[in-house]
Amino acid sequence: MLLSAREHASAAAASGVIGVEGAATRRIGHAWARRQRGGDRATPGPAARFHVLHEIFEAQADARPDAVAVVFGREEATYAALERHANRIARHLRARGVRRGSRVAMLLSRSVDAYAALLGILKAGAAYVPLDPECPADRVAYILQNSGAEVLLTTAELAEPHAG
Image (cartoon, rainbow, N blue to C red; front, side):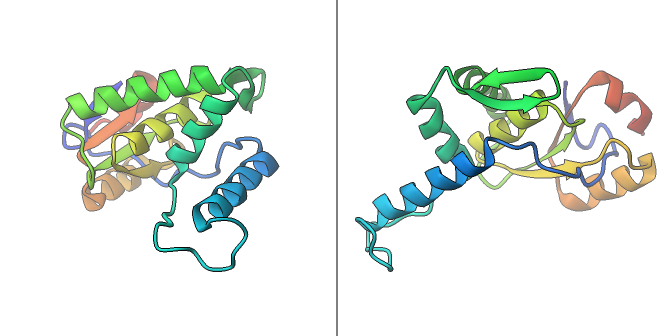
């Protein structure tokens, strides 16, 4: 469910990161950095560019679309499935006016969907404001109000206790 942050004055600091093949992700990041520097030189060349999380993920999705990207409990998603889900979220956010520099609050429990939401927010060009569903409604409202979030990405179930 996508809500205007102003429609709901609620949410709070989401703890934890859902792992994406930890060691593999580090290897991809290091290899990418070496390629951008033009080999193994210690200093980046003039064309070097830092890549952001969703770009690294996209490269991995292109390279290994059928490989498992995220596992959470019994739930898992391949790179291709997660990429499609994140792209749908990004398109939906852009249709709601989210652009580079926007802030999108994310009030979601830990899950594969939460990781897709994070990637979708980044793909839309926005910064994400993580909110913990376990926080009291007044704390969530305070963070939403002071973060400048324009949109709140959540579920109907999680929105209800935090609705203002």
